[in-house]
Length: 209
Image 1 (cartoon, rainbow, N blue to C red):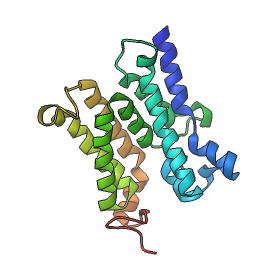
Image 2 (image 1 turned 30 degrees about the horizontal axis):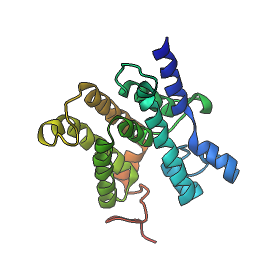
Image 3 (image 1 turned 30 degrees about the vertical axis):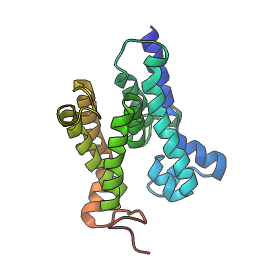
């Protein structure tokens, strides 16, 4: 019963529609009606600006981190990643936003942070470097997901300081999230092929002013 209750809390944490709430409370805008019509971090940056985007990014990461830390906070002997996944599902299918959520990248990052801060730092480095090279958040999200999944298998053997031991559940979840992220970026993949995908204003392929 305790585990079920904590899983529900994790899902509800993930369901908090950060971008929607920030937009409505501080800007009197529903970001789902602008830009890419997404409630995620990238669309928040695009529609509401840098400060709002950073706030939503931190909130979405925190949702995943808090959920993943629930078994440690309440002394439950369950792999914390299970609670992180519940938060990711909440973010993707939020009960507070008619089950239409974001692409789960930031909340997945929060899950990794709660699971292993060192592996989070490693994964964040991959994301930042890939973003600088591609200047596209969509490409970065997909490529990073693949590299991070591969890293869950390789690092325990070549760099155990970052990831001391192989955790099959971490690899399974990372692989599943990679597939899911690709599915959620279906429209982005089409725009990438057509050369019309949105670019950030920095990096090697930044958008032209």
